[in-house]
Length: 96
Image 1 (tube, rainbow, N blue to C red):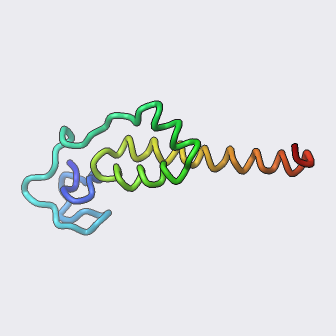
Image 2: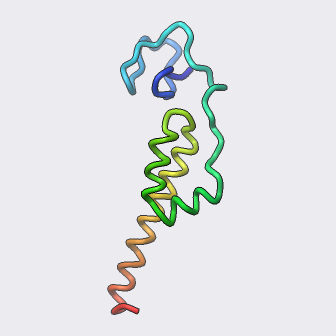
């Protein structure tokens, strides 16, 4: 079952959510209410090219669509890593 506030998975016997500390009620959120659809390809590309967009999408989708949140975060991190690698290669190569 899942926490009603943060959407994280909690054990069936849990009294409180270990992530956010909210007491687990008698009617936990079912797995059907959590959107597990992946992030669309175009939005992944934008998150890669502009990592700040990926960071914003991470926080926007964190509780309502955890898969989209994870995808946006991963693409933003790949974009930052790629940018750093390109800067290192340009610096080593003496510029354009």
